[in-house]
Figure 1 (cartoon, rainbow, N blue to C red):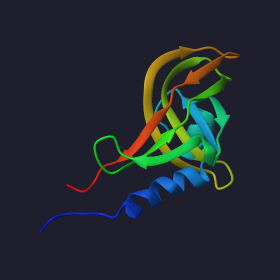
Figure 2 (figure 1 turned 180 degrees about the vertical axis):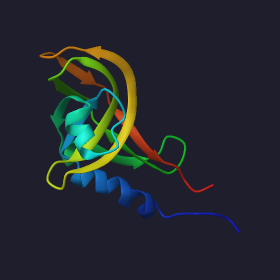
Figure 3 (figure 1 turned 120 degrees about the horizontal axis):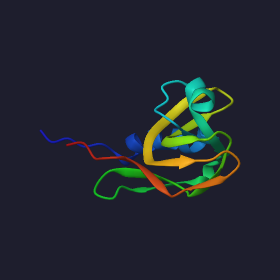
Length: 123
């Protein structure tokens, strides 16, 4: 028996991020909680809205959510290694990914290039 999933299965998870994420943090290590993402490990943040996300077919299969390029105001010097998407109203850590390790300095602005969250078709 084959495996299959309607695009709506994948879209609903990705749409939850698109419709609820209101801030992205650049972090010095992998956060596992909202507090770590927004305070402990945060080196800076930027406001997000649903218009910063685009839902489409995945690169090889499934679906993807593209996160727009954003300029993050750096508020603490350190080495950036992760990005965290959060909802500040519900204090929810929504998604964490790695980023190219880079030293950042308080008071500067760091551009985060466009990136994707991808969910592949069932195999």
